[in-house]
Length: 265
Image (tube, rainbow, N blue to C red; front, side, top):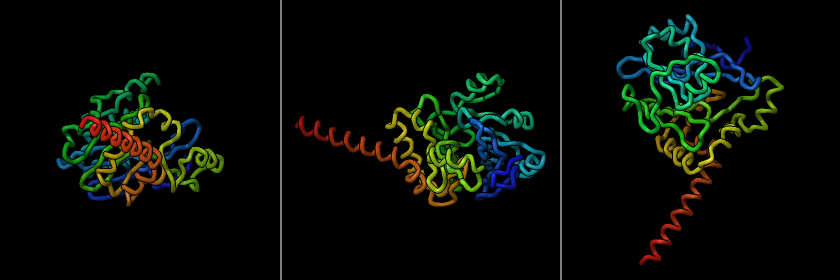
């Protein structure tokens, strides 16, 4: 198995009270090894909420079972569901929650994936309402990603909206590709192919502003280095081009609205 640079793998890594990471093995995406990462949240009732499940091993299962029952499995976008069926087999009472498009993508790949609930666009589901904020980022007809904010730890949980590959941990042949794409740490950002799919930059900008308004201290991402501090600054940096465009568009719109109002007087 290829090293990812985030070893040990398949084990709970504490981030804050009631919040853990799991660094998983690399997966192949367009022939390139992508490191993977899941996030586990302990809900107030003692249930476990698992975001973007990675490989489930016997050892990891023992660690999870020592904390609480796994009750919620989150497939946050159309690309992150590879290990969901293994977790469902291990935890048959767990409910699977998927972003729009997950089931369709799985069917296209010939997988009979069971999604119990489709995640709502702009409000948290009842089992974690008041504990974890939830939103599906708008602006793309292709990439619809659910993002979450864990109040107790002030942690924003993303998947692919930011990728920040640490090039020293990558195969040498992969490093130029990451540099060209502009998704290398310390200036990780949205991958260019995904960015092109967001045609409605006003909607995207509005949702990015909402994430910033949550004021996260930490930002967890699935691929590359996650941000242990200065979460708001990292969001402002990673999305600066989109935010600049949307803020400028809003300023122009506000100015035109004032001119129209003045003309009616």
